[in-house]
Length: 418
Image 1 (cartoon, rainbow, N blue to C red):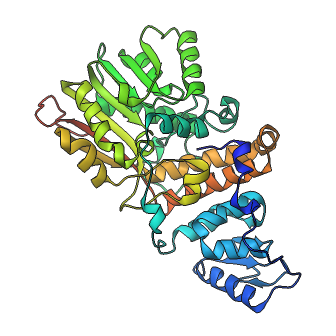
Image 2 (image 1 turned 180 degrees about the horizontal axis):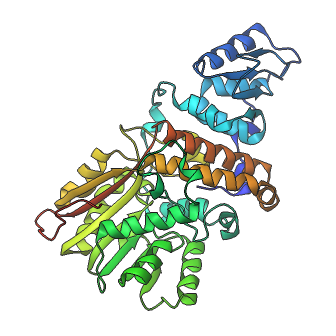
C-alpha cells in the first residue's frame, strides 16, 4: 500500500489549477465554499479554517480541524474531494490537527459520492501492469515495513481471538499484534483443515509468513507465488534460516502461471489486486490446480455493493486494485468452474483493530520514515492508514474470508470451525 518518495513529487497539487493567486483575505465565495464543505461533515464536530483565519464549525470540542492553506486547495477539495483531499494534504496545502481517524470516519459516514464516468473504467491488470503495481507498493524497502508491521511482516488483517467472546475493551488492549497475526495464520490453516503431507499452493504470499507457518506447524508442502522481488527474496532467506526450504518453495511469478496439483489453494490479501476483469482467469487457475477433493480459502478486502476504489488510493497507494463484493467473487470466480461456498466470515472490525496497531507503530517511527523518504511520504501514509482504519470501522469496506470446495466433492466438513 505504499508509494515511493519520487512518486509524491508528481502530485497534481504541484501544477497550477488556477492562475489566480491566493489573496491575503478570503472572499465571500471562499467562505461560502468552506461552509459547504463543513456542512458535509456537520454530523461530526469538525472545524474548517481558511488561510486568513476564517473558520466554521465548533471552536471548542472539535475532534479535528482541517486548514485550507491556499485557495487552490479549497477549490480542489470542493470540486473532487475524493481525489484532491489526499493530494492537497500530501503536498501540505491542507493541514489536519486533532483526531485524524475520527475526521476520516466523518468523511466515510457521508452518503457515497456519485461515481464519475472515468472511474467506471479500469485497465486490465496484465502481467506487466500487475508487476508494476506490486512494485509501486511492496518493493519500497523491507526496512520500512519492519518499522510498523509485526515481527513476521504479516501485511493483512489480524485475528483478535481474545475479543471474540465480547467485552467492552478494544482488541488493541487485549491482544498484541504479534499474537493476533499468529491467531490469523492458525485460523486460516484450521479453516483449510490441513493434513500432514498435503500439497498447498498460495497465490500472493507476501513475506512468506503463512507458507512457513503451514509447513512448520501442519506438515504440508507449499508452493508460494508472488511477483514482489523484495518479498520473495526475504521469504526465501527466512525459509533457509528456519530450515524449511525443502518444504516451502517461493516462486517469483504471477498467479496466472501456477501449475501442478494441490489439495488446497489459499490466497490472503491478493484478490483485491487481481482486478474484476481477471476474476474469471483466477477461477480457471483454481479449477486447474485443485485435486477432485481439493478445497480453498480466499481472504480479501471487499464491499457490500459495487463501487470503484477511492481515486486517490488508486493513484498513489494501490494502483489497479478493486475491492469486490461477495456476489462478484461468487459469480465471476467460483460459480463458473463449479466451486461451492462452504463458509463466509466477515472480519472488518478485526481489520480496523489491525490498522489501529499499524498506525500507532507508524507514528512512533515517523522520524525514521521521514529520514528514509520525505515529508510528503509521511503524510500520504498517515492519511492512508487513518483512512483505511476509518473505512473498516464505519463499514465502508469489509474483510471477507470464503472457504470453498468443488461442488461435487463430499470430502467437506460437516460442522463449522469452532
